[in-house]
Amino acid sequence: MQYFKSNTVLYLNGQFQKATDTTADVYGQSLHYGYAVFEGIRAYNTHNGTRIFKAKEHFERLKRSAELVHIPFPWDVNNLVEQTYQLLKLNKLKNAYIRPLIYCAPNMSLIGGTKPSILICAWEWDAYLGHEQLKVCISNYERPNPKSTPIEAKLSGNYVNSILATTEAKSKGFDEALLLDMNQNVAEGPGANIFMEKNGKLITPPLGNILPGITRATIIELCNVLDIEVTERHLSVDELKQADSAFFCGTASEIAGIASVDDYKFPIRWVDTLGATLQRTYKNLVLEKQNYEVII
Image 1 (cartoon, rainbow, N blue to C red):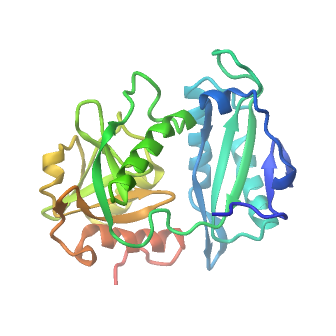
Image 2 (image 1 turned 180 degrees about the vertical axis):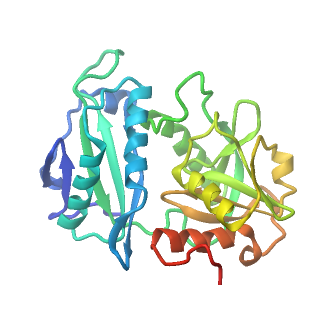
Image 3 (image 1 turned 60 degrees about the vertical axis):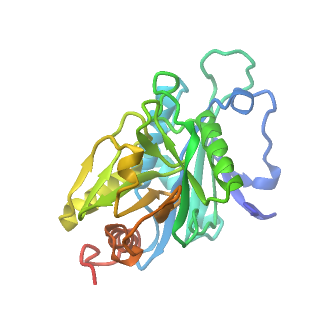
């Protein structure tokens, strides 16, 4: 996939410049050690114009991620939101995926970051996990123990774990992986949270060993609007493999239905699931359609 062209503009440390003119230092901690934090944000072309969904919440989480790993965050969140809208305008993007990244200055030692830089880029990106239901396998890789790195931070180095899990899954003929935590409970996908449906109710793993997804929180909010019962608690693999349906959710993937986990196929047709209902509702919400809570 081509992420930029000769005329693509990005934002770097308060200035807009062409992506082709941008350089990075090869002696940075971020390149060598994965010591960086980032966000994934989406913009949508709505009837109210281009809107970035929950922009402030994403930049607040970026700030929190930086604080958790001792990277200074000297920027104003509201200004970053404004600059991101300007970035979209300069690149003539209406539907876009936005990637802010905070990385550190050249430093080969293992001490906390100094003189951080902020990069924001954007590109057109369709549904990250595609439009079909997914064949998923339980990964041999586990989510990192929260005592090893802060799991609630979107820390670049943590995503080596995600790359390994997805690569393993695809090598086995699956579409995506599902990772467990150190206690062998269901945790999340490599880049998305998970919900399962059983007897007309939803269950999702609790915070603590998973990324606190903004889309996950939005789904819980929508469940309250739609009077769908949702519980946050630990899930075993055996319990997941007795569920009626399941889905991933995340900024990049939005809501993606899961067809099967290993050799277990979920029995309810996707169109009849709570996930499909929430998928339609979520789409109406991000597109700012009126009465999004009413399912037709």
